[in-house]
Length: 253
Image 1 (cartoon, one colour):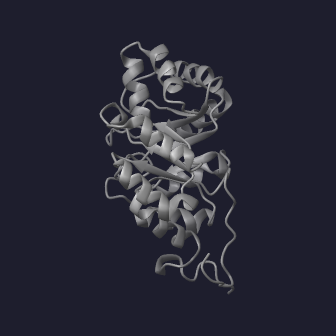
Image 2 (cartoon, one colour):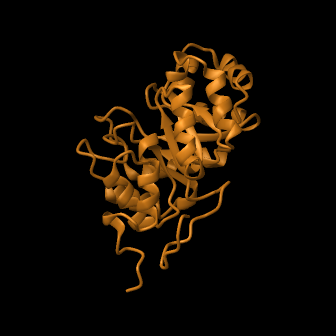
């Protein structure tokens, strides 16, 4: 840091198992990636190339290499996984991960209907090849999953070999964990935490108010994702109690 302040919560060191910031790249140029890393590399832990943007992104291998050279792993959004699966191209997807030298992958079923046993089998197979994040929750705002089902799904996917389970929110933060207004489904989150360790969950929280809520609930080292590149440093100040929303949260009472 640039100077010393007392009463700042301790952050975990990279590479971390908790306190992760997952950043969503929705189509940054190579120059934009370089600019982003020049200010935020120390605060970004993993990069998701949003949904299936990698299919149309130019200079894809060069972009991935820039992130990896900075020590930040990259993975394709879960929608791309689903696009391959729904076309019976799972083996092609596995080859794609090798072609682009990716060490992480996301397994999701937010856009297609998939039997849970099938999803867990995909996780098991991919876990022999890469580190797997599995996403729980639907992208359909009309599809409400009860808390017991969230817990059941998360447990089974962790047992199948997922490194972390992701709580769905989409890029806007208006489905899954959140109501259409962006408000956190507080009862859902609290019930999930009675059964699933917080360090095993990565909460998609693209909106500032959502990030604040999770930091206040679970502390500076909560795992959050779908963070816009321009919001990585602002998020870090929220984690450290250096923004108005959490300013007094970590101070000695």
